[in-house]
Image (tube, rainbow over all chains, first blue to last red):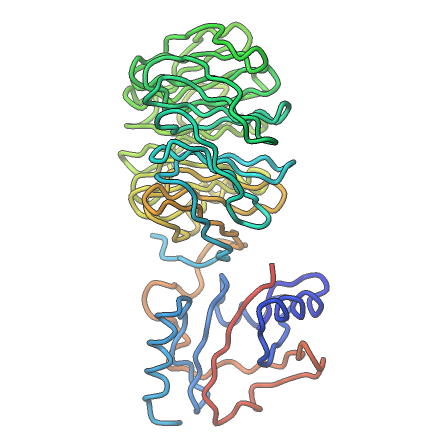
Length: 79
Length: 353
């Protein structure tokens, strides 16, 4: 989810993804409106969502934190 | 109580020399210079590539560094050898040494008047150096543990922070005479001057506050609580923000000038002692004395905190993710949350800058 890209958002995001080898789905939240609804004030920031569409973790900005959150997410019963 | 620890973008952590203290940026040549007292060197950083591009050996224990943008020279104040080392920053050659007072641990430069002021902490004086002739022209008596010096080009003054005296000495920029003292709180470390608005900010390291000083009346008009042991500070965003390196907490406080309140805290490395702002991009460069590094971050806070706190539990946890309909970067098609129904996924927010 690319946010706060006020100029040439698509081009800037594509360039960034090419440089960093990001090949997943990338959505453009140019104005940051959606980020604001989620209370995002800084990036990078991750929201981990379970199979029921429920937010389980917020944060996970370091690799260690991410690993812990992912382990917990996948150990939980699906949905 | 500020619980916010977001509102920033982490850019880089740059390894430099040992025990980095003062940091200055030259926006024209896109370089930052960092005094590294534990390795007796001056680290040179490319601020766009965010990497160290050179390290120049200087004399013993450089704590402060001043930069002359006209001649492109850096002056390190070397506390243990009681002198300044002059470095040509284009060639990274050491071109001179200037003897000053005892334990010079702070300073400042007035590029217009062509003077460097050096606070000699052990003898409570300020050496005034002619930056073209590279000589000491006079020595001014300040107070106990004189150190950092801020410059006020509007009023033609230099302000020397006296760590051991809870005061700031006001020096006339033309005559180099002390014309008064401003009382501040205990253990003041550094001063940031906003000459246009006629205010200065002083870090009171012992009581963890920032004194707001009226430069016309020479008095403290407000006190802003920050995190533990604030040391270095810098203004940013046309003076609308003040950034304070909290040495005892490993954070940088983001202060909104208009409300004179701490809006956020940015985690940086260990024992951050100084912060500089790149005027071209607004990025903060923070020297971490105990991590031997410089942290680069951007402040993206737009308003006072009041939304979800990052401390405790995020209010969205345990609740459905709000629906979205946003364009796909590659296809341009609108994508909605419904497409991911029944799947576990990570929503990562990023920015390309």
